[in-house]
Length: 124
Image (cartoon, rainbow, N blue to C red; front, side, top):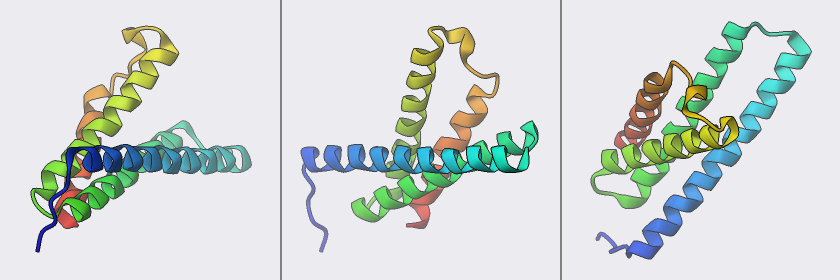
């Protein structure tokens, strides 16, 4: 039997999931910074690790959203990936004070976040 979820409970869940996603991202980035300091990693390795962190975190957020919703799981995962990327972009714009600060890999990161969120939802 499917339980009916209200709009406010869904919104609360989405906000909590995003908060957990960003806390996990912060923790993993701190770990990466420690590894960078300790082992003098190259820029290429650091960039690959950051991309991997985005993928893992949005996959988990999509997985959790799909598990909770039960129907149209891929859409809920896609939504989580999109929201994660949106917040990431807004923070980048606030920090850099301009659009020119956005990376050349903008659309690549968008595709990775939304795709891994959707995959997480589908596999939940």
